[in-house]
Length: 296
Image (cartoon, rainbow, N blue to C red; front, side):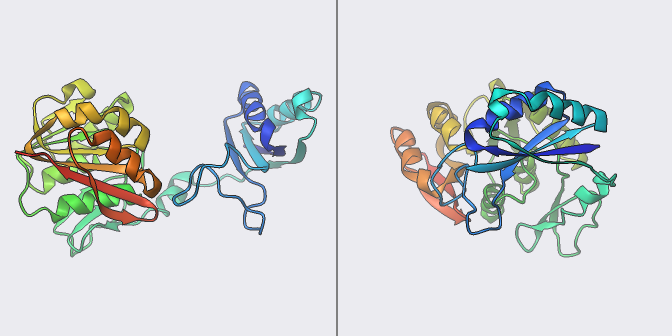
């Protein structure tokens, strides 16, 4: 493969990315051209930081092409375009062949959620101290146990002394939270997501972990009332889903919400206030886990 590297001002990033994809780039990535310098800028609402823009003042775009000829042709077609006037072609370089599978695997080690509950990639041995574990590999759907929001949800599940009778993982991604709930003793677990790829991933991961989930599918599979309503999504959809998620709670049931930045706590509390009173149960790296109990 061949990589085309271009310095692009902020206002041209989106246009150049679209043009590269139209020119059959295999992938396009954007990074801060001033990263690791005093001029580096926080972007995209990193935890604890406000959202300041959609790109960097000076961005570096890297586009991969299958052949040198394809990359050179893209370069030739971009140069005369008006939107490319303030851009600078840095390089066109070959990308060495690598064992990408092995390289990816080397970045993921077993994750200790508690001393006795671990998330273990399939290429690793299960640690001796793991009384409970989930076998899970990085894939298309979000949720491998490494992100703070997922870890906080897993910790909460492991900390409960009395497992629920019914639980729903709403926005299940990889299915990791539904699988954990089942392994920790919840009698009936449903897992739903709007993304068919997430549904497929959850079904495969549940089977690989010898877990029998009650229902896995699109959101209409979430039916009845649940003792635990778990949703690890993002703040915006959580606000939209507030009436529905609260309706799914059984009397005395518990709600567990994640995917929320510390600065978003009040707006989430306000969205849910007609039904339940949410509070911050855990926080980590700028993210929070919020919980509430529905009155009996």
